[in-house]
Image (cartoon, rainbow, N blue to C red; front, side, top):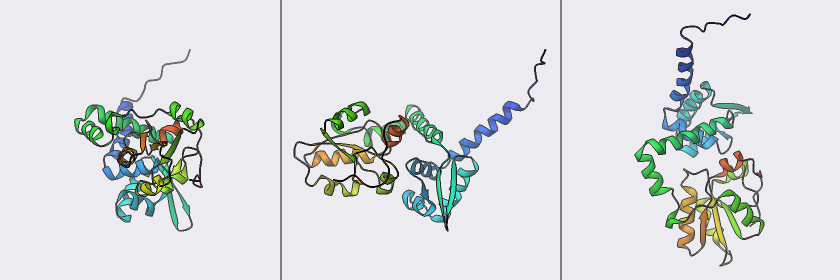
Length: 230
């Protein structure tokens, strides 16, 4: 008969310390911003520094902490180092953290309501509805993330229209067309701003309920590389 093993008296303490390592890794706004960016695409240190507005030295230091916590991985390509999230569970963890923050922190909820929720009371479009309407050629889909994120992965058929190029992307669209914009996820400001600008230009527009990461996690088709033709 097998004997019941007794766990070390400090087992729980040791486990809790390891869990706390993740908490400490997230206890810096710059590191959270880096993870947000890496959940969109693999990037070099230089690209990450530019994307999140930090110095190269500070970006390298924060990436080192994330790597020690097992949240990111790196590969070298010549003289450049490319970083990526360790796996999709890191992005899921970040998504859960955002949702918890909105539920428990009034300031987060206020910022989301003021800046991110759909303008004009329009309900976001669900993924299933988007797929149906794309199949009937009833909508034009705009990916309003930066171009390098689009190239790393996007919804098939979506046009690459970074927010700063939105007016050019709207030029020549038929008057009756409806635009559906998406970005990095439900806490990203890019798609709501694109919808606001579209409507100000007289173009019917809605945002996708969630962003590209959620689309990918749902196992839906993903295109990589060259931009879709306008």
